[in-house]
Length: 125
Length: 278
Image (cartoon, rainbow over all chains, first blue to last red; front, side, top):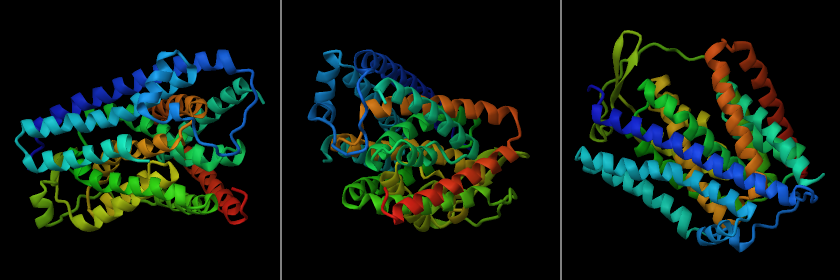
């Protein structure tokens, strides 16, 4: 069986998408990091004891609210969220790619992966 | 130590971790988690959270380059991602229920296995495998640009490969690593997929697998922005640098040297886990 050219096209678009996603999220994390370090750079560090994050940095809605107020940690967390969303977008994109090829089997498989990712982001505790 | 000093030191160390991860082909996570826990005395759950984020960054950043080569098989990747993402959810769930000592011990063992497996020589000879009914139905068979033009391959042992992928996903979610070695083992050894296709498809899958557990870690509050920021930026820079070095020099001795570093880290993790220091 020869390499499917539709597949190749999807993969190239998806590869570019991933690169853009990583660059974008790294930039947002960097900007948030600068704000955070300017404001809190002089404070002492404590990561030895596990405390968990405040509610604002855990939920997706909380992260957006925190970032909108220009808090450094909130903006970093928004960048990390963008990064997590990058492979998720890739999967969503592939659903359309397989649908265009009329490959029902792989539309189902890809949708299962997408549903698992959605569960992890929105419903897991 | 102030937050500024800590962040700069962490960013520099993460850069080295990303570099070693790229040069050994094992990924940044395998160096990063021992580094954060042993050297920086960070709680292993924070370390795993930060590591998962950097695993997504390196995998996605490298994917664009791999895709152009035309080796990766998107159908194999997508079908096996059902297994790795389900495993990743299990791994992330286990991370809260298992003691940190146990996580450290499992980490050490997986590190030893990965170091051994990545050093093992493998034959590049084409395999004459028969067509497999399940692989046929799933349309997994494909071709890749080999030395004599397009080379076809027939995928074998799909159920075994799927089960191994589930385990790889679980380890990824529990330990914050890409589990690339285990994914390649499942595809190259069990499913008889050509090595080049296995490694590039594995890289493609790592980001999606890590995203599945990163969501759980985020919701649980295991991803700390102050820690993840220098780690993610450092590992990303280090892995991009490592990829550049690999393109220019034949890194045989470099790889051997760094594999020894990985073995030492594994022993250190095992010792700390067993003695209850982590």
